[in-house]
Structure formats: structure tokens, C-alpha cells
Length: 350
Image (cartoon, rainbow, N blue to C red; front, side, top):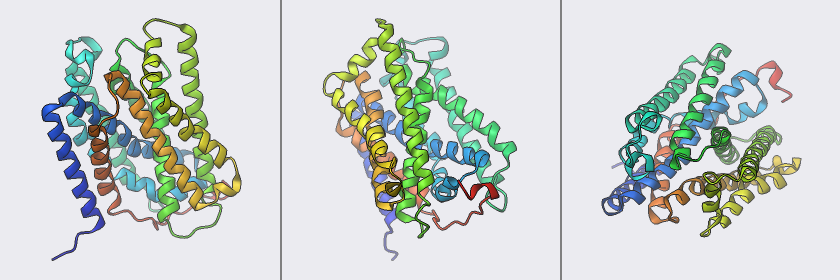
């Protein structure tokens, strides 16, 4: 009889926690559907952000992509889960979105919303499949594929952010919101890849983590800039249909979550990764990456749960574990962190 492996246990955790969420949904359908949405929005960012990073590296080159490529490819193997795990969100839409219960028409008509969601996840799977199949023998993609795919990916993630997150309050709008959510997804993938590379990759030179750590530092600058600009613009406009979005998120204890998000997603990486010796330390980089991931998880809950006028509950934790364990199982069981990748001539000094 075969002994269970670590990934067998991970799969068991995914199935058990998903079953518990389903049991909660019997008596508390709203809470279970909302929890599943929040968890999905966090974990979907891992393969989507990995797609952004892989395609960007194909166009720009750089040593950072050589270090992270095995981890990023492992994340892409979990992208077929996105359509499957989206099903509970679509079936539970009337328990999540206020406009779904009021039978809106036009852009927020529920059938049109569901159709767009399907298009998004199918497109992301098609791009990931293209990445896997169009790689040359040396591990690189043709630029002719990378740049159109990157444009389509950015456009679709922006629309998905508007549909899945911003429409939780249909009368609230922010033109910068899609870019902010997309930046958060890329940060999620980069932090996860850094944590994996620092933990599991074979021994490498001391500066191998320096380039991707600097990229993470640059991305947290971008995320912080976008977040602050949105706050300033909305606060200065002082419009009755915009200000309540922030008021709900600085009351009922959510103000402390906001502070924690700022600390984890900006202050900690800024104060740490700005120092070169710390950027080259496996332990430091892994710790900072995990802190950033924790901060982004808290940010997703901060962006969603206040619109449901409730706090964090057991269903939120169970849904987070269920989807996360499923992603770990499908992405990690065949991961090879010793995957060779030849550098291009202009990558050596990056």
C-alpha cells in the first residue's frame, strides 16, 4: 500500500475545507459565497500575476526571470483551476452582488456578467497554454507572441477587477482601480515566486535574489503610489457616492487592517529590500515575501468584506485554505526548481 505523500495530504485538506464551506453554505449562503469570492480573488492572482511576469520577462530579459522561472511555471500549472473555482462565484452571485439581486440590465446584467467572467478565465488559460506550447528549446518565447498576449492579459484583468471587485458597490467608481488590483496580483505572484526560490531552489550565487527583490521593491512602490493617488482623488472630490467606500473601511476595526496592509505591503519591504545585503539573504527575502503575501491577503478581505457589512469569519478562513491547497496541489506536485534556462547575452548584467 502506497504511503500518502505531502501532496496527497494537501489535496485532502483542499477537499475537506471545501466540504466545510459547502456545509456552511447550507445555512449561511451569503457568508459562504462571499468568502469564496474573496479567497478566489487572492489565489487567482498567483497564476495571473505569473503570466504577467513570464510575458514581461520574454520582452525585457533580465536575471530576475532566470531565478524565478521554475516557480512561475509551477504557478501556471494551476491556472486550469480558475474556471472550475469560478463556478461557485457565478452560482452565488445573487448572494454577493447587490445589483444581481435587483435584476440590473446592460453591463451588470447577470448573464452578461457570467459570460464575461467565462471569457476572462478562458482567455487566461489560452495565454498560459500558449506560453507552455510556444517555448523554444532554450526556454524562451517568441516576442511575436508575448506582446499581444500581454496587452490582452492587462485589458482582461482590468475588466475583471471592475466586474468582480468594484461592482460590489455598483455606484462607486475609480479609473485607477483596475491597475491597482492588477499590480496587487503581480506582487502576489512575484512574492510567492521569491519565497519558493529562496526556499527550494538549488544553491545559487549570493546575488541571484538581488534582481527579483529589487523588482518586488519597485512594484510595491507602484502599488503604494496607486493606492495613495486613489485615496487623494476621492477624498478631495468629496462626493457623496464615493466617500462612503472609504468610510466603511476605516470603521469597525477595518482601520487596523488597513494599517496592517500598509505595513506589510509597503513599509516592511521598503525598509528591508532597500538594503543590498538583505536583498541577497535567502532568509530575509523569504520572510519579506511571506509578509507581503499576508498583507495582500488582508488587502483582499479589506476590499471585499466591508461591502458585505460583516467582519472576518470562519468561512473566510476555510475558503482561503481550500482554494490555496488546491493551487498548491496542482501547481507544486510536478514542480522542478532545478529547471535549466539559458540566459540571453544582455541578461548577464541585469
